Image (cartoon, rainbow, N blue to C red; front, side, top):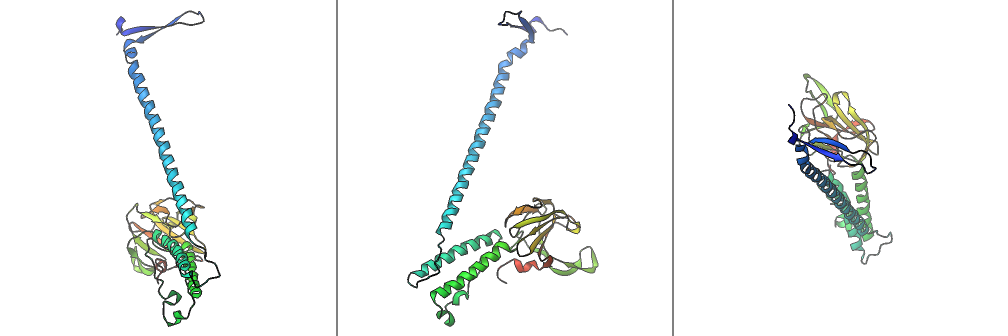
Length: 288
């Protein structure tokens, strides 16, 4: 079907170099819609510009918040006093308390990230009993200081706390094989109840030495820590770390699943010392 003359418009192109003119025939409806096309293009352009401005403002805001947090950390570090080895009885009590409080805050921070409660310092430093009364202020402080230094080191670098906060479905030691009621098997860890997709957190800072499929463990992660400790996280539905990656306590490393030798969604968790599994229950809390 031929277009009517009114349906076609002729666009004449004039060349400035005095060369012959050219003409193009375009459907009239496209020319009439040109302003609509231009308006739509401008709308998309303005939307992109607005989105870019929004992203820049968000990045700027996040950077400001980061700098504020860093400033607060520096300020807090500066507020923790350094107690001189030479201690005078007069006016020294406040310095002791401030130093101890600073270390307690650090320790409680580690505990909170592991889902643990605080601990008791009862009987540390004499506890105001008859023997404690014989100690000087410096000796009392020294006892507290040694104890807290020990705790800080233990908490920071020892697997401790819950990889996920939930009830247990199986404990460390011998048990009935869930796939064969007629035989017993040694269970080298504890199982935490969970649903597929629940987050799994590492219980101490360290380095990922394995992340992949490990037979009956299914999707599995092994993390090496100092003092020859290692933690194992099995039956995961997803692994979120890579071999060689450095992780910090409380980082999300994977998701609960039911891969490998498993009868349902749960987290299998192990603590190993020098390659041998030990009961993880002993590492769930400071008070044993």
